[in-house]
Amino acid sequence: MAEKIQLDVRMTEKEDDTKFRATVKARVSDPSGTPLPEATIQVSGDSYEKTKNARDHGMSQSFENVPLPATVVIEATGFEQEVIELTEDDAGSSKSVGY
Image 1 (cartoon, rainbow, N blue to C red):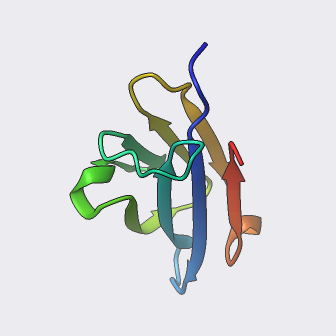
Image 2: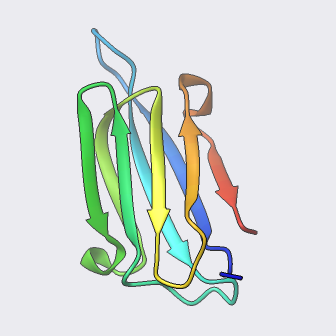
């Protein structure tokens, strides 16, 4: 059985006069806290889809101007896929899985 990825998604509200948008910061590590540089982080929402590798900036990635609701999907070899659904209610907070 694959191990769980530790994922911490932090939301920061952005002011926008048309739709609610947020900055999503995703940090990915294994159960021991070691960064997973090969992890793929995908954030998608209404007319928005971006994918980054954790290695691009160490163990944390930032996605700007994300329309909510949105979905964050994390994949890494040898680990179970993790999915987090984000809504406007999550702005200013963090959501974690695998901890």
